[in-house]
Length: 378
Image 1: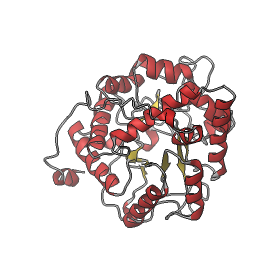
Image 2: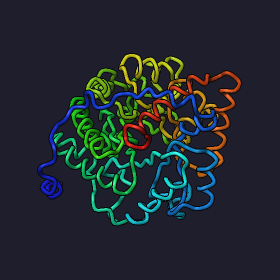
Image 3: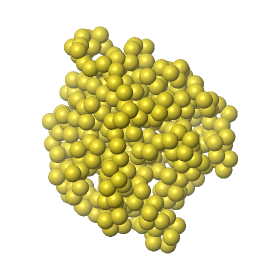
């Protein structure tokens, strides 16, 4: 860590978010067909070290707003290749994905650092970001310098969206999805906010979208939403766990926020996972905290969702709750027909009046504005 920081000496210091992003309010969303508009709301996972005919056909059919890449293929236990083998291969893949898409794609990856890192040294990637818990023991300016190097690497590879930083407060250090994997900066909300702000600023300055996750807070969970229903009602510390979001949003943060699938009956007595909860997504995040940017769901194929809902129902309920982008990672199971089913279900919900076209356009306008801010739209 010290060696990398020495090499990065002179990087610009602490900056503020305030005033950096202003919504374009272009009204472009309502000019899209319903099919194209819903496509923009999907972030999908695909297989392949290079663009193959199946993926090219899927892009032409779904017209997604984005694609998420992984180095390890979960459904096959690593027996099949996924998306990452070397820097040259990955750069060629992202270029091919963009060339095959009618509209510029958001190309996402998890590059938190530490254990959650798709661009590993064994594949030839030079920049290896420490875990959040390691970063949290240093200064925000050190985190900013290291995150800037990582973001610069992402940008050079054609990756424009990092699903990081994690702003879960380390309430329960052995939490199987967060604390155990060193994914939290600290048990101090102020430290989390300072390092997350530095991390996000560095990405913004390098032209890479960042993402605060997992709203409203996963750091106290004794269960793992990848595997099943996780209830944080009795462990969630409201003031502490919302504090990083509150601080960054008040400071002008307007990149995406990812929802968690945790159940919190104090925030929503219906015991819906946060991703599907209007009281949590719309009333709390948009209303109380004043967030105006893109809201991204965690992967809808995770156990916490599929134990209780069909994919189609979950996607519809997430949009009704206020989510803008639906993530279908194809990492718990690989079935590209899931993407088609979800898109068809959302379109059908609009056609029967369960979701209004205006609601779709609100999300799509946020997505197009985000793309515009990062040079992906005219």
